[in-house]
Length: 465
Image (cartoon, rainbow, N blue to C red; front, side):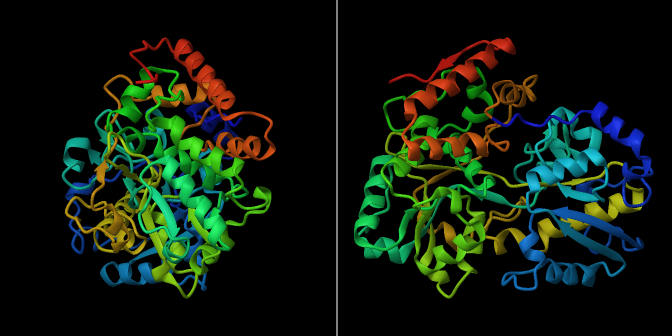
């Protein structure tokens, strides 16, 4: 299994010793911090006298392609330059972003703005500029705790996402499914109906891409428990968190959907040959019925063919005491290089605020707007009218790093590149060489050992109700 990469100042110092030129911002790495905070920026006024070039590193490589049918980076930058003609923004991207971003961060050669990879919150200040105090930032943006540490905010989310299932409405209709599933059992039955009555792949795993499998981790918090405190507070003190509570909820029943679908041959014939880019058009044209991905994926599926209206988004099929929930959380967050020049830091902060408040990026990509004033939901959430949106509450004071420590000790990498663990579910279900309960037992053992290693007091146990 893949251990979470923990970046340390010592590691970066060693890299810098090899090549000092690689460790700094795009203006030579001078450490002169801007005096402007995010709340103080008045777009169109602040920074009008700045003339500079900033470099942005992103995961959205598709938006750099001429063939991209949505709003491209070229279009966004053209609009930005109408307000700030003297700030040039150069965007580059990495496809395997979770790993490439960490590599660049360690090397120091990443420019002025990047989407923050899996870094311990205690290390955020080693690399990123603070946008401002948490209290002040909470008046400006949602998801203020996503990249916050000890009263300082180091990241502004590019967009917010709620979690559910991408599905093809036409395929569901052809299969005779006229009511969306609200439990794991109902979902599996619907997948069986799709296999029997249509030619579509009921559930596409996107196994080969790897990172797409990590999406399953996003459902084990508020979505599966109905509790906003679960993910960052209660889980950290829970023994056997992957056990079956016998009521169709919690992590056990999230991952079991995937295991059962593969075991019952309700997925693609050969998981090793799945194709992420190709899956978009297949969802659009009805060759695929469902994919478990965040809401960010919907717009990409809709843009991938001639049938955008056939692509919809449904709540994840778990109910807690008859009620459905969805976790609303930050996507990747923009971080600003603390070693960039003062002008570049201010220009970067202006650009991030423009992307948040003026660009329409979140809405265009089917996401939830990050600006506190933005209350408009995209049409894709039309099936969520009876679903409660939950934002995970932050860790309690003194435990800000505990989740990362437990994740690293256990090597489970939950919500931190845990694609190998989720891929193993597919492999064992397809090969029939390890039962789901055996996998769960292994995960519980690793987590319980991590609790002991970190000296955590156990307050909860996931057991049958």
